[in-house]
Image (cartoon, rainbow, N blue to C red; front, side, top):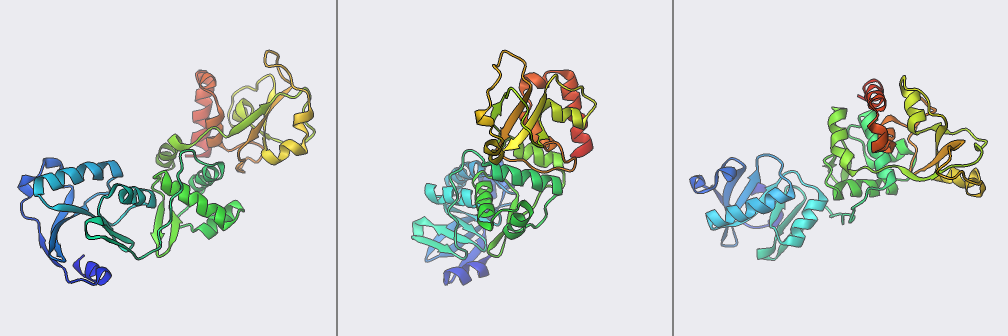
Length: 316
């Protein structure tokens, strides 16, 4: 640690263990490796988290460490994401991010080893990022670069870079930095990864059409029709299809008269934010299907059972 700091800061640094751990609250005692370092005649407390901590935990711990030790607290981080780092700079929380960046505002010091990306201010996930996350889950991506991800999704590298920025901004733990590049690592346990990404995902339906006649085109199944294809569930009285945004114009759907909502339709055509090809070929992928099904539909025990059956057979 000392050698790294001297190399980066071009300063002579001394260090010694913090030996008054008994003064600290119980929650702090085993949560950090604590060291006193001296830089430019200033002694500061360097706190290296034993386990990964989120930004909220770091905020609280900093207040306690400074209150009980009397030293300025600087976090020594081995793992972080650009979103958390940008918020720490914004809030004036001192840190040393190993091999990346040093921020010591009380010393007027902001040093970078790697160029910092400005994280996207992201509150709603884009459909491309959602599609990428689901594909990564299905295929168990390991050590996948932006270039490789772009090839897998058949989009530009710049598009994937924006997806990676969104994942950083949303605080998802799937990116690791290797030199100057970010790599995607999916969870080996697909159920665990699904639970992690599910709160960020949205219903991929953009618009539903209820045309008076079925468009003359090959379309993939969606909704209950797709679920019936995946399981033993019986079909609806009408078929539900999914199409991409580009197909709306090609099929002339906006010019076809629609059936009123209080009448049973010939079919339903759902315009989707993305369509992720899946092994069955003629249906939308299972996890996107779970996002489409309404709470009312999921209250039906037959539907709930069929969803579980589908996930066990085709996903988990």
